[in-house]
Length: 328
Ligand SMILES: O=C(O)CCC(=O)C(=O)O
Image (cartoon, rainbow, N blue to C red; front, side, top):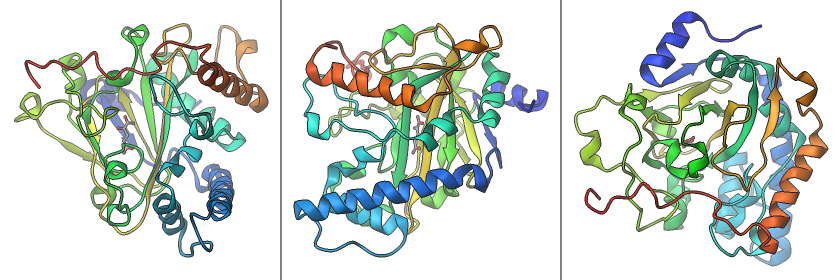
């Protein structure tokens, strides 16, 4: 079994994050790239059928994705690996996501689970707080609200707990941020504050410009060291749910692409009970592990149905409880 060395674990414990190069190979990622070519093609077809695009755009995958976004700013939802984060009524037509075998296989990749096991032990649930972040070079994103959207543009300083409902307050969540293209400062890699996971949960100010992107106010972070976390394609960054981090704007001229996956010990609250969690690894009850893609897809379809029908009437994600007007 792989997993983290004692030195890596010490580093994770001390800093609240850990970059690991080459955890995944090009062969591991190839099915995902192939699948996303098809997703992009079908989105282009959809946009042409609607008259939003006249002809298929040319260029690299990133260029074509940016053209799809320009034609329909909501089209990123068809590429994401989570249902949209909206509290309140939703429009069924745009309440969509991408569920696929390649994504499911990556969620269960042994190298990822080995690293996670080193941190949280062998009883591992896949937490549904997960995002696909396809970030075109920001000069190609004309829509201002999209440039501020955390799946398209830079992100604000935050701890992942900010978007979790209280059922996950005591959950040990580890984020696995997977680089699908090289990530470096000029194209918007992560930046973290070492040791910030020990500061406890922080105030996050409500964001007037985009409700779903609250931020830790600058006064809290003044004087703290920031560390950039460049990683090459196939590398990952692990981090704690209290690690304060952000990502930089992409000014590179090409798309930066990553996905963030999360895991927690089986039985602990996920922070997003509307969305489905599954057992990814279990030493105690190996028969409970989900290895069937169709079942996973059905779980997401059922969650979607429950939300759009109103049967699930509770809030889906957290957006207000960390705001403190006295500080913000
Ligand atoms: O990938 C990014 O740009 C941001 C990721 C992030 O902030 C997160 O995973 O919490």
